Length: 348
Image (cartoon, rainbow, N blue to C red; front, top):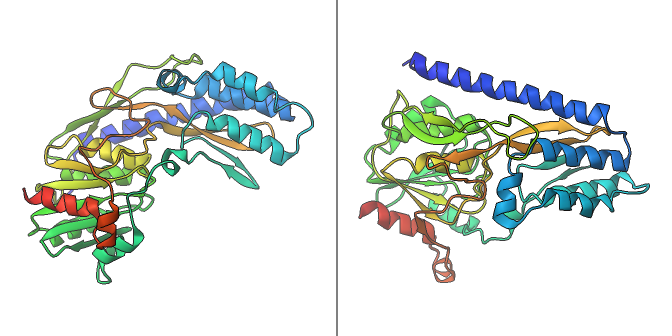
């Protein structure tokens, strides 16, 4: 079946809006780095600090959340950026400065390294065991579009979606839903899913949507000031025109759930038949864009903030409906605490 014309128009308008923003950010960042700053250690430091100062979308929010002071960060790292630094020394200084943002969407790219911030999940328990995961999946599970799935012995469907990097085909989802048709409930395990293609996340979420649903809001930068944004624009999810799942769903989460996977959880929590089980997600709500420093290094940063349907920030993650951790007792007995909790929840 063809998608409704209104849905196609909405997606085209959203795509054009995002492309327009990308062009504006790229042009402005290019102007900053190429015209104003020399290719020196100090020049690259100044360029990077200014790009973040003028275009990063969470400076005010993170000042409120944990006291981030971007001007104080300048003073702190400006001292380290002085002098005749090697490329490796400069890369370390700039990466350390970006880490102050506590944002997994912020990266610095050089030919010899990728500067990244991973403490959004490294400081927390994984609540996931590869050994237990293989035990529950067995060896005869199905695999399509990167999704591993099977029916557990209590007639509960189980899907493991470890990434949204793969395109998820509509035909694949039709087959998965038909396979689970006689199950009493469905577990969608996204622990460890660091994101990927937002379209894939929305395509999957649309299979649980009954009607056009408000899932959140987005803002765009309108100026160089830290608080200069457009009005909040509502974001909607249209129900799929193909097979949909209408029975209870439990989504398993941990701190490694990030970016597009975080957005997936935000959408799914809007549906009454869905509950989330596990740990708070890792967050990563801003749409990322890129720019370039005078020396050619690339920098990716969050430029457009997104919010949940209650207009609340989800940059630092989304709390589960049921907080459940993997216990040592269950681990010794070969049981996954989160899966077992979800199985009981789905048959209540």
